[in-house]
Image 1 (cartoon, one colour):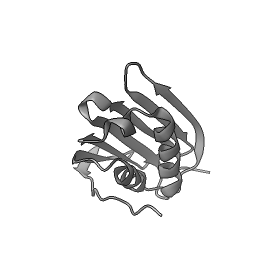
Image 2 (cartoon, one colour):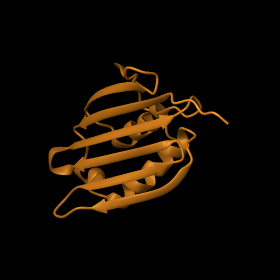
Image 3 (cartoon, rainbow, N blue to C red):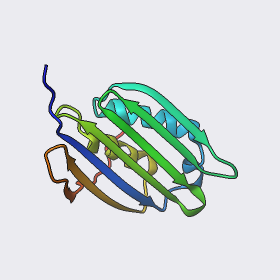
Image 4 (cartoon, helix red, strand yellow):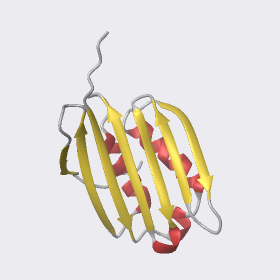
Length: 132
C-alpha cells in the first residue's frame, strides 16, 4: 500500500494564559490526550515533564505524528504544535481544543503544508472549540 506524504503542521504561541494551567503537567497531559482524540488522532503514548520551579512539557505521540506543548507559566506563555500526516486527521481541531482549555489573551499561529514539495506557510484559522 502506498501512503501520501501530505501533512499539516499547526504551530501556535499563546500569551496571557493562567499560571496554574501552565504549571500543571498532569492537567495538561489529560487535556492534550482529549485534544488528540477530538481531532480523530490515534494516541500511541504520552510523555510529560513537570519542571522546577515551574513549567511543563507534554508530548503526545500519535499514529499520525505528534502534539506537543512547552510552557513558561511565569510569562503566561505556551508553545503548542500539532503535526499530522494524511488527509483524515486535522491538526487544527486539536489546537482549537487546547485554545478552549487555555483561553489565551493573545495567539500567533501559522500552518505549514508539508510533504508536497516546497513547504507552504499559511495563516492558521484559529478558533476555540466548544467543550462539552
